Image (cartoon, rainbow, N blue to C red):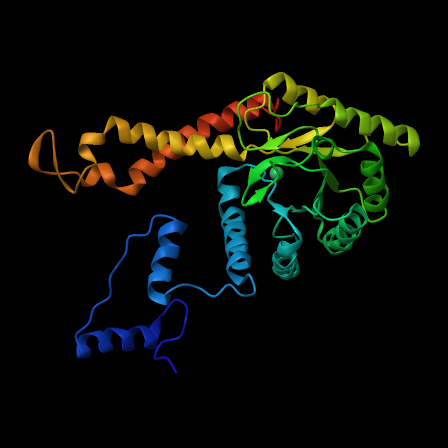
Length: 335
Ligand SMILES: [Zn+2]
């Protein structure tokens, strides 16, 4: 039995802690937290880590991030599509956990916690991929959520999934597979999108490794329009592995019905680039807590304050993301 319960203390328990500290001669470290990284680090220090045997860390972390966005987006005055990416088969319990939280949130607020989740079952047989996706979609639809699925294999390597050795024909999605997915998902609802492989890769590599062929998307759209007698461009496509792609190919993919593009790798670099530039510019002030070109005893606190250099990362991140908005022809679309 612990003396104090988990969570934020107040009232009688808070006073008992103060008294405990004074009577027993200990004191609490007060930490200036500046974001979830330092908040989590403080909690981890006190707890010696958090159990994650049922993915509870991943689930609560996802929920917490989503709640933060719900809390602040309205103050920025911008609409947000809140999405989780690439849940392979072993991550399905994570999506189930997020949906448990999402259903609870829906009961309280009348809207889902997330706009959409992606299931990436592209490593499984196509029947299993589509069957499982349909089952999850049935659960998401009443919440007003969208589902994203993956057909074919996005090349390259991301988050420990290495597809850099996959044969080339799997890197280009077959129109028949898209038609099959379209037919089955349409039985549940219309709010689904397909991450199709058209030579796109996760990560940035030197040119010439794989050939990007956006026309694959057009072939699928035309095939479904003809075979299933739909209107033109029936499918919402998602462009994975957009980092490093030239604008003309991005625009071409948009022309064939790509409505979203993932640009993780370039944004990772852009954040680091700001920190790197800051370090290089102020290197002589960042070698110790005391001592810089102005004197051996001069303090450097205002240079190594994480709020200062993390902000530099945010600034270059924003610049790169503005380029993406331009590449995606997505400027002034909310007027
Ligand atoms: Zn992806």
